[in-house]
Image (tube, rainbow, N blue to C red; front, side):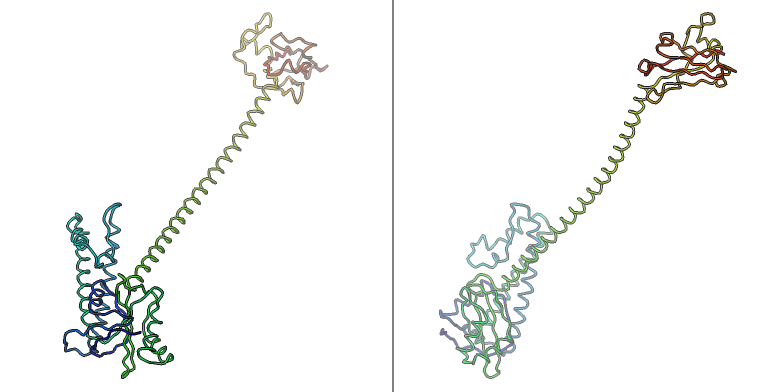
Length: 396
């Protein structure tokens, strides 16, 4: 693990992590030679001691983290406002080094083209965030150049823990147990990208160790990768929650529809029952009418007075005043019993069936009691009388 080294101002601090950028990467690459490990070049003289430098570095890195998070949130808000086909923003493209002048001016172009005042103001805030981050990154780069920290360029599959162990055991010449103890006190990440730079510094006098990661040639820092994954997870969670809410609403709607359908089915079943009952009743009524003899029975004198019978020949003259509201169901019986008092008479001596198309002794039979206290009409041919109307003229 050899590399070109440059003498730097000594200093130490607890573990820290910073997001890098293309600017930091370019400046560090320009200052460093090739090799597995390298050190930052010594920067211009400064009156700050190493502790102050590290404190300032931590503060600047923390502010970069905070401003980066704010900027990414604002970018998300802006992208959510875009219509299909409209230009959106990506955090990484704003800090990529190999951009054309037009690409570097994308924010300014969007500000100039944006018509909505609120989104124009949002873009202007994103520009302020970008410039703040760039300024902080330049300051971090200058501060890093004053420190004796070494770095290693990450290859695919590398882990910060393994790289730090290699530095502590091979460069700092510590035993494995001591190295593990120091590493347990340092912040580490498993989200390295090929091209990132992992930095190390061990101070044997104070027995302190620090390690952190910058963007290097990878184009993205672990912080950006982590936040992108977190945002993706949040989006997936929100999408899943929205899908669950939609499914729950759909379920509620289906249950409401099912309940309404059950109510409708119950109503239709009830209606079906009512209609079946009505049909049954109508069927019974029709069958009754088809199989019954309807008659009107009254004494002859009253019929003459109403003009129904002629006074001389005792024939039917006018049946309009009559109502055939009595009936004999020929399926159940073929006899009509007549009692004189029901017709204002003291006895019954004669019963005539009108109209005279029906023949006595063939179609029907009249049976009178010996004391004339009653009489019976016996139907001999029920089929002949089914559904017919007859007048029974009773003589006393």
